[in-house]
Length: 371
Ligand code: GN1
Ligand code: MG
Image (cartoon, rainbow, N blue to C red):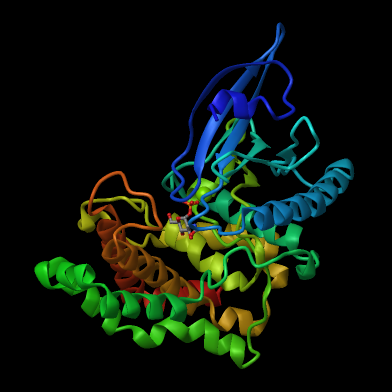
């Protein structure tokens, strides 16, 4: 089906004037659609859900429906009470003309339309300590929003997501069963170096899983993908205004979000840097993130939670590097790539960041203790 025809199935006022690719997501295909009438315009975000990743797109739409229902009620009550210094936002689902949450095309792909948060942007890299502080506040506020959601209203959107030991098994299996993967490792010194990096940290993979199994850490609702370009910042005030990309919101450890946001926000070079010399862990950005996060969600953290924060900060770049490396070896089947070797480079960046964190363990723990 032609994209314009498809988008016209949704209930947006005005005439569709343009639809263009939008954002830098690694999973779904995202577009911006502009509708105009004689006095203004409406912009919406159009997405095709990646079925290779989300094998049950109907389920993630049901989840999104329940999450936005819960959060919008709370957001509206808080805004009406003037409880905050700002209007926190969350995109909502735009229904089809028939009242459904999505359209399925003839190829079986699920398409959805959501509102665009206007006068706001998400960045691909950390901009400044002020920016990172606001990202921390946005994640903290998001945790507050979903904290009283009934986990039973959510169906696991992506079984195995953020179970690091599972990614390790997948990596092992790729090397055991895929001859091309083995060739890639034996043919390149850099790939061998990354493979050794993984070998040296096998034990790290299950640190949070062990703490959960022993009952020290408990799941609550998490975002699952709180990276820098999923956090919208108000163009006028520079303050955080919304967390987007709600596909993976589900019961999980807040530590995963904490570690994932930090690996994304405290490496000012970003995920795609080619020069490893520029990949660092910036402690000023880290302190700013913690300050912002704690201002909104500090009350949720128990002593046991606090005891495992460093592990989460070290684990998440390891986990993402492992996921990128495994995908490179498997032929780039999960993360979209624009050029060959891109997933290998993404893995190099995350592993370098993990090393930078290990080298700063003492001072990172020091900052955490002072929270
Ligand atoms: C993917 O689609 P995007 O870019 O928001 C991935 C995250 C990774 C991220 C790394 C469902 O998110 O887990 O951290 O890439 N999402 C999924 O850039 O796997
Ligand atoms: Mg995203």
